[in-house]
Amino acid sequence: MENKLVDPKKHWEEIYQNKPSDQLSWTQETPETSLAFFEKLSIPKSASIIDVGGGNSKLVDYLLELGYHKITVLDISSAALERTKKRLGDKAKNVNWIVGDITQIELKESFDVWHDRAAFHFLTEADQIEAYQKQIEKVQPSYLVMGTFSTSGPEKCSGLSIQQYDEKSLAHIFLPHYLKISCEQTNHQTPFNTPQNFLFCGFKRG
Image 1: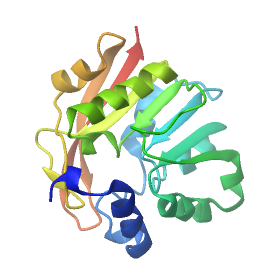
Image 2: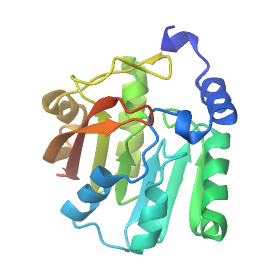
Image 3: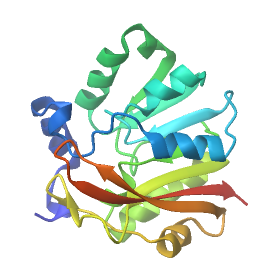
């Protein structure tokens, strides 16, 4: 199934409407690597943060617990965001929620930190990647925290092809405006007890 033949909005809505979290390979109880990068980059609690593709992620839960209070979660699936809002309960009102495709949506505010563990590696066409780059250039965050499937990771996820990255190829995407601070590979253990190798990199605007 080629990604360009799939309606991404419909694809992700159907998944989040029909599958519980414990049947989704990307489900992560504790986003340890992402949180470690926030600490490594010394992100202040006053920072404005956008989590791209963060629909059902628990990163927002942990960031709120740590005292971050300017958090935006963007996802193409409204069902994913509704699931997370329900999980957070009253805390959900402290988060800005955006439903939209990151390659097409008009972002209307700036952010200090851009985090993405779930969306970028699904962009397999040059025009999609270019649109993503343009969004970052418009927002001009001070830091990027990017998690993608590594060259040792899977070639598909949720029936869709993905783009694998190594340190060099991922860093090249964000040059010359962002310089790599550090990268690490980590295995995500899926709810089905199978490993998926990720590459995480932190970047600072130069």
